Image 1 (cartoon, helix red, strand yellow):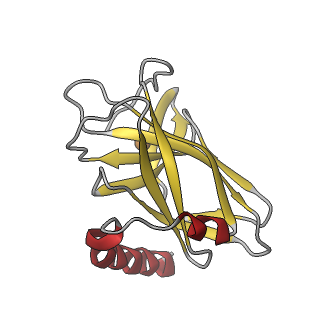
Image 2 (cartoon, protein in one colour):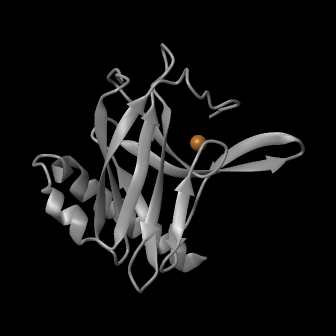
Length: 165
Ligand SMILES: [Cu+2]
């Protein structure tokens, strides 16, 4: 447990150093193809008026021979992103940040979906326009980074009920 806390601190420190420059130059698409991780069906939701928080979803498949651990995610529209999971407790749907990263075994697919694992994006200061795309960058421990083009989808089509922060 202590080790994972230290790891998180290191990751946080790396974020602090890397975040300002992460999107200063567009990453070539070839970097994505070289990675062992493969993402599909990535999207984030538009926000209701007056809100600055939304959620993102995708499927990540590990096509390599070693496990990959997702340790963080970055976005040009948010300075604070978290992996969240939904829990049912006492008949209530709650969500909480996932601590210690997300392991994806070789050959496995990790699914972020409404009502389950998801990416929370906080402090969004710009409108999200349905139909446009926005990048998400997933950082791993030993499998490099995975840059994903996420579609912005209207909240109206599939509302994510009971979101509270
Ligand atoms: Cu959440």
